[in-house]
Length: 171
Image (cartoon, rainbow, N blue to C red; front, side, top):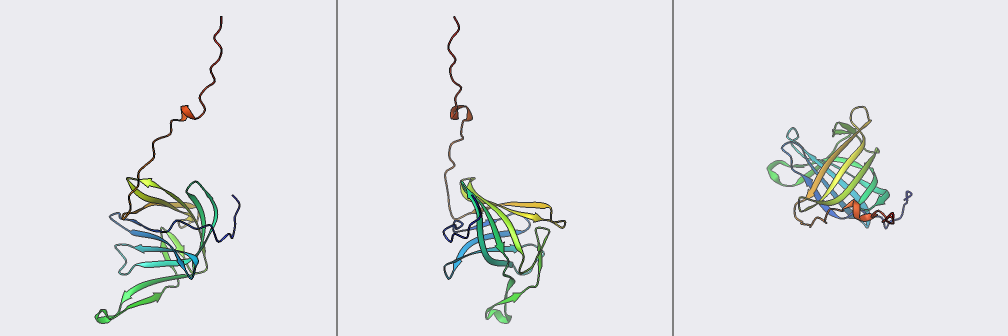
C-alpha cells in the first residue's frame, strides 16, 4: 500500500523486550495526547542508565502483520536517580550510538516491524534499515512480550494451496 498520513494506521500496543546476555532493547508503541509515539530503550552492560529514544512515528506501508515505519527522533535521554533516591531526573543527550548506528534528534529511522507468534509468546522482529557505521546495513532483533502467550498457527502445506489439475487418463 502507498504511504499515508491516515491516523488510523497504528502499531499494535504492547511492551516488547529482548533479554540476551548483552544489551537489553525494549520497544513500546504508545499514545500521548492521542498521537502515536514509539519508544526504544537501550540498556547495555556498559551503560549505567538506560538510553531512551522517543518520537512520533508514521506507518508508511503494512501487510499481514508487517509494518514499515518512519520514526522521527524527537528526544534522546536517560533517566537517572537523584542523590538519596529522591526523584527521577531526565538528562537530554545530543546523540547516541546504538546498534552500531549514530542517532540524534531530528533524524528519521526507517524500521520494519513484523508481528508474529514465536515460542508461544507474542513477538516482533524489529529491523533498523540504513544502520551500521556505513549506513548500509540492516540490524534486526526479535523482541518478545513476556507477559502474553499465543498459539502458533499450523504450517501451511503449499501443495494444497493450488493443487495440480488432474489430467485425463490416456487410452
